[in-house]
Length: 106
Image (tube, rainbow, N blue to C red; front, side):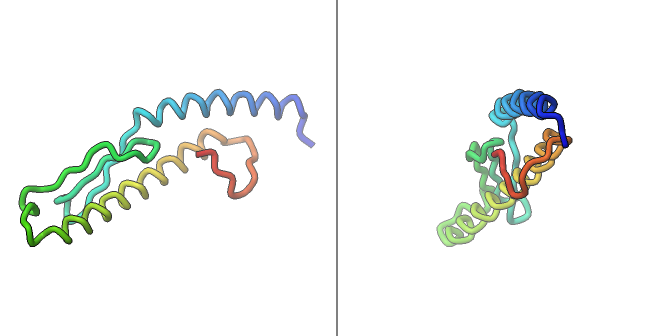
């Protein structure tokens, strides 16, 4: 059985690391793209949309639905990349501390 004092120490260390990671998430940016790079979006580490870029070739009246679809696809791409990055960082962060299955800290 794990020593309660050691578990408390690990929990305190995890809390400190989590606070540092929360601050880092504000600075982190992930880019997603669609349409071969014709549309791209940038998300913060917390998932906020920071930037969207649309290639000039798509800015025609008859391209409206395509642009809308590509924006959604680019956002989904960035979101997948962000979730994978966060999962990797969380695994490294919680290394030795057992967390209940399915528990998300973000």
